[in-house]
Picture (cartoon, rainbow, N blue to C red):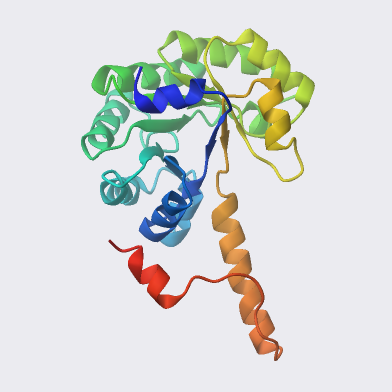
Length: 251
Protein backbone atom coordinates (compact mmCIF):
# COMPACT_ATOMS: atom_id res chain seq x y z
CA UNK A 1 0.00 0.00 0.00
CA UNK A 2 1.37 3.42 -0.94
CA UNK A 3 1.66 6.23 1.57
CA UNK A 4 -1.22 8.06 -0.12
CA UNK A 5 -3.43 4.98 -0.12
CA UNK A 6 -2.69 4.48 3.58
CA UNK A 7 -4.13 7.93 4.33
CA UNK A 8 -7.52 6.50 3.33
CA UNK A 9 -7.28 3.91 6.09
CA UNK A 10 -6.17 5.98 9.08
CA UNK A 11 -8.19 6.90 12.17
CA UNK A 12 -10.22 9.59 10.42
CA UNK A 13 -11.01 10.41 6.82
CA UNK A 14 -8.47 12.08 4.58
CA UNK A 15 -9.46 15.74 4.35
CA UNK A 16 -8.23 16.73 0.92
CA UNK A 17 -8.12 20.47 0.14
CA UNK A 18 -7.89 21.38 -3.52
CA UNK A 19 -5.38 23.89 -4.87
CA UNK A 20 -5.41 25.72 -8.19
CA UNK A 21 -1.83 27.00 -8.44
CA UNK A 22 1.59 26.80 -6.83
CA UNK A 23 0.93 29.42 -4.16
CA UNK A 24 -2.37 27.93 -3.00
CA UNK A 25 -0.83 24.45 -2.79
CA UNK A 26 2.17 25.70 -0.81
CA UNK A 27 -0.05 27.71 1.53
CA UNK A 28 -2.17 24.63 2.23
CA UNK A 29 0.92 22.51 2.83
CA UNK A 30 2.12 25.13 5.32
CA UNK A 31 -1.12 24.53 7.25
CA UNK A 32 -0.10 20.92 7.79
CA UNK A 33 -1.91 19.14 4.96
CA UNK A 34 0.20 16.20 3.81
CA UNK A 35 -1.93 15.54 0.75
CA UNK A 36 -3.41 18.09 -1.64
CA UNK A 37 -5.61 17.74 -4.68
CA UNK A 38 -6.11 20.04 -7.61
CA UNK A 39 -9.43 21.54 -8.67
CA UNK A 40 -10.32 21.31 -12.34
CA UNK A 41 -12.56 24.37 -12.07
CA UNK A 42 -9.72 26.50 -10.71
CA UNK A 43 -7.29 25.28 -13.37
CA UNK A 44 -9.81 25.87 -16.15
CA UNK A 45 -10.91 29.28 -14.90
CA UNK A 46 -7.31 30.47 -14.63
CA UNK A 47 -6.83 29.53 -18.29
CA UNK A 48 -10.10 31.13 -19.39
CA UNK A 49 -11.56 27.75 -20.34
CA UNK A 50 -14.74 25.92 -19.29
CA UNK A 51 -14.50 23.17 -16.71
CA UNK A 52 -15.42 19.63 -17.71
CA UNK A 53 -14.91 20.20 -21.44
CA UNK A 54 -11.63 18.26 -21.76
CA UNK A 55 -9.81 21.43 -22.78
CA UNK A 56 -7.23 21.76 -20.00
CA UNK A 57 -5.01 18.71 -20.51
CA UNK A 58 -1.84 20.77 -20.99
CA UNK A 59 -2.65 23.15 -18.13
CA UNK A 60 -3.34 20.22 -15.79
CA UNK A 61 -0.09 18.49 -16.68
CA UNK A 62 1.82 21.75 -16.34
CA UNK A 63 0.42 22.29 -12.85
CA UNK A 64 1.26 18.71 -11.88
CA UNK A 65 4.82 19.31 -13.07
CA UNK A 66 4.97 22.38 -10.82
CA UNK A 67 3.46 20.68 -7.78
CA UNK A 68 4.53 17.06 -8.13
CA UNK A 69 7.81 17.50 -6.28
CA UNK A 70 6.36 19.66 -3.53
CA UNK A 71 6.39 18.82 0.20
CA UNK A 72 3.03 17.05 -0.03
CA UNK A 73 1.33 14.17 -1.80
CA UNK A 74 -0.42 15.33 -4.97
CA UNK A 75 -3.67 13.99 -6.39
CA UNK A 76 -4.74 15.44 -9.73
CA UNK A 77 -8.30 16.16 -10.82
CA UNK A 78 -8.15 15.06 -14.46
CA UNK A 79 -11.84 15.50 -15.39
CA UNK A 80 -12.58 12.45 -17.59
CA UNK A 81 -8.94 11.94 -18.51
CA UNK A 82 -9.13 14.42 -21.42
CA UNK A 83 -9.93 11.69 -23.93
CA UNK A 84 -12.53 9.07 -24.73
CA UNK A 85 -9.75 6.63 -25.64
CA UNK A 86 -8.68 4.56 -22.62
CA UNK A 87 -5.10 4.16 -23.84
CA UNK A 88 -4.72 7.93 -24.14
CA UNK A 89 -6.05 8.38 -20.61
CA UNK A 90 -3.57 5.77 -19.42
CA UNK A 91 -0.71 7.61 -21.09
CA UNK A 92 -1.77 10.89 -19.47
CA UNK A 93 -1.85 9.15 -16.09
CA UNK A 94 1.64 7.77 -16.71
CA UNK A 95 2.88 11.31 -17.38
CA UNK A 96 1.30 12.50 -14.15
CA UNK A 97 3.06 9.74 -12.23
CA UNK A 98 6.38 10.62 -13.84
CA UNK A 99 6.18 14.21 -12.60
CA UNK A 100 5.32 13.11 -9.06
CA UNK A 101 1.54 12.77 -8.76
CA UNK A 102 0.38 9.91 -6.53
CA UNK A 103 -3.34 10.01 -7.31
CA UNK A 104 -5.78 10.80 -10.07
CA UNK A 105 -9.47 11.66 -9.95
CA UNK A 106 -11.44 10.50 -13.00
CA UNK A 107 -15.07 11.50 -13.50
CA UNK A 108 -17.52 9.58 -15.65
CA UNK A 109 -19.85 12.47 -16.54
CA UNK A 110 -22.46 9.71 -16.86
CA UNK A 111 -20.74 8.43 -19.98
CA UNK A 112 -21.10 4.66 -20.52
CA UNK A 113 -19.85 2.84 -17.43
CA UNK A 114 -17.92 0.35 -19.55
CA UNK A 115 -15.89 3.18 -21.08
CA UNK A 116 -15.05 4.66 -17.70
CA UNK A 117 -14.10 1.22 -16.41
CA UNK A 118 -11.80 0.80 -19.41
CA UNK A 119 -10.17 4.14 -18.60
CA UNK A 120 -9.67 3.02 -15.01
CA UNK A 121 -8.09 -0.24 -16.11
CA UNK A 122 -5.85 1.60 -18.58
CA UNK A 123 -4.60 3.92 -15.84
CA UNK A 124 -3.82 1.02 -13.52
CA UNK A 125 -1.94 -0.69 -16.34
CA UNK A 126 0.07 2.39 -17.33
CA UNK A 127 0.72 3.70 -13.79
CA UNK A 128 0.11 0.86 -11.28
CA UNK A 129 1.13 2.93 -8.27
CA UNK A 130 -1.28 5.78 -9.00
CA UNK A 131 -4.31 5.85 -6.70
CA UNK A 132 -7.37 5.93 -8.95
CA UNK A 133 -10.36 7.70 -7.45
CA UNK A 134 -13.22 6.78 -9.80
CA UNK A 135 -15.98 9.36 -9.69
CA UNK A 136 -19.55 8.95 -10.76
CA UNK A 137 -21.81 11.93 -11.35
CA UNK A 138 -25.08 10.15 -10.66
CA UNK A 139 -26.03 12.51 -7.83
CA UNK A 140 -25.30 15.57 -9.97
CA UNK A 141 -26.50 14.49 -13.39
CA UNK A 142 -28.47 11.27 -12.86
CA UNK A 143 -32.15 10.49 -13.05
CA UNK A 144 -34.66 9.35 -10.45
CA UNK A 145 -33.07 5.97 -9.61
CA UNK A 146 -29.72 7.41 -8.60
CA UNK A 147 -29.02 4.89 -5.85
CA UNK A 148 -29.23 1.82 -8.07
CA UNK A 149 -27.22 3.43 -10.86
CA UNK A 150 -24.58 4.58 -8.39
CA UNK A 151 -24.13 1.08 -6.98
CA UNK A 152 -23.91 -0.45 -10.45
CA UNK A 153 -21.37 2.06 -11.69
CA UNK A 154 -19.18 1.92 -8.60
CA UNK A 155 -19.13 -1.88 -8.67
CA UNK A 156 -18.04 -1.75 -12.30
CA UNK A 157 -15.25 0.73 -11.57
CA UNK A 158 -14.08 -1.24 -8.57
CA UNK A 159 -13.86 -4.41 -10.65
CA UNK A 160 -11.78 -2.47 -13.18
CA UNK A 161 -9.22 -1.65 -10.49
CA UNK A 162 -10.33 1.61 -8.88
CA UNK A 163 -8.63 2.15 -5.52
CA UNK A 164 -11.40 4.41 -4.25
CA UNK A 165 -14.70 5.82 -5.44
CA UNK A 166 -16.16 9.32 -5.37
CA UNK A 167 -19.81 10.38 -5.35
CA UNK A 168 -20.06 14.19 -5.35
CA UNK A 169 -23.50 15.54 -4.52
CA UNK A 170 -24.24 12.73 -2.09
CA UNK A 171 -25.21 14.37 1.22
CA UNK A 172 -27.94 12.22 2.78
CA UNK A 173 -26.46 10.51 5.86
CA UNK A 174 -28.54 7.33 5.46
CA UNK A 175 -27.52 6.93 1.83
CA UNK A 176 -23.87 7.59 2.68
CA UNK A 177 -23.93 4.96 5.43
CA UNK A 178 -25.55 2.41 3.11
CA UNK A 179 -22.94 3.03 0.43
CA UNK A 180 -20.07 2.70 2.93
CA UNK A 181 -21.50 -0.64 4.04
CA UNK A 182 -21.76 -1.85 0.45
CA UNK A 183 -18.25 -0.88 -0.64
CA UNK A 184 -14.94 -2.64 -0.03
CA UNK A 185 -12.93 0.44 -1.07
CA UNK A 186 -12.73 3.93 0.45
CA UNK A 187 -15.67 6.24 -0.23
CA UNK A 188 -14.91 9.86 -1.09
CA UNK A 189 -17.61 12.51 -0.73
CA UNK A 190 -17.54 16.19 -1.58
CA UNK A 191 -17.88 18.46 1.42
CA UNK A 192 -20.88 20.76 1.26
CA UNK A 193 -21.40 23.67 3.69
CA UNK A 194 -25.08 22.67 3.79
CA UNK A 195 -24.38 18.96 4.18
CA UNK A 196 -22.99 16.75 6.97
CA UNK A 197 -20.10 18.08 9.01
CA UNK A 198 -16.67 16.48 8.91
CA UNK A 199 -17.40 14.85 12.27
CA UNK A 200 -20.63 13.39 10.95
CA UNK A 201 -18.93 12.09 7.80
CA UNK A 202 -16.28 10.48 9.99
CA UNK A 203 -18.94 8.71 12.03
CA UNK A 204 -20.61 7.49 8.83
CA UNK A 205 -17.40 5.78 7.71
CA UNK A 206 -16.40 8.09 4.87
CA UNK A 207 -12.71 7.69 4.17
CA UNK A 208 -11.99 10.79 2.09
CA UNK A 209 -13.57 14.24 2.09
CA UNK A 210 -12.69 16.56 -0.79
CA UNK A 211 -13.26 20.30 -0.86
CA UNK A 212 -13.37 20.47 -4.65
CA UNK A 213 -13.67 24.02 -5.97
CA UNK A 214 -14.86 25.45 -2.63
CA UNK A 215 -11.57 27.10 -1.65
CA UNK A 216 -11.09 28.61 -5.10
CA UNK A 217 -14.61 30.01 -5.10
CA UNK A 218 -14.22 31.35 -1.56
CA UNK A 219 -10.94 33.05 -2.53
CA UNK A 220 -12.61 34.66 -5.53
CA UNK A 221 -15.53 35.71 -3.35
CA UNK A 222 -13.17 37.26 -0.80
CA UNK A 223 -11.46 39.26 -3.55
CA UNK A 224 -14.78 40.60 -4.79
CA UNK A 225 -15.86 41.43 -1.25
CA UNK A 226 -12.59 43.29 -0.57
CA UNK A 227 -12.77 45.42 -3.71
CA UNK A 228 -16.41 46.27 -2.98
CA UNK A 229 -15.48 47.46 0.51
CA UNK A 230 -12.65 49.61 -0.84
CA UNK A 231 -14.96 51.11 -3.47
CA UNK A 232 -17.48 51.96 -0.76
CA UNK A 233 -14.87 53.65 1.42
CA UNK A 234 -14.36 50.89 3.97
CA UNK A 235 -11.24 48.97 4.91
CA UNK A 236 -11.41 45.32 3.81
CA UNK A 237 -11.92 42.82 6.61
CA UNK A 238 -10.57 39.31 6.92
CA UNK A 239 -7.04 37.87 6.91
CA UNK A 240 -4.66 38.53 4.05
CA UNK A 241 -1.10 37.17 3.75
CA UNK A 242 1.56 39.85 3.48
CA UNK A 243 3.56 40.43 0.31
CA UNK A 244 6.53 38.69 1.91
CA UNK A 245 4.33 35.76 2.98
CA UNK A 246 3.30 35.17 -0.61
CA UNK A 247 6.84 35.66 -1.90
CA UNK A 248 7.99 32.94 0.50
CA UNK A 249 5.57 30.48 -1.13
CA UNK A 250 7.57 30.62 -4.36
CA UNK A 251 10.39 28.51 -2.96
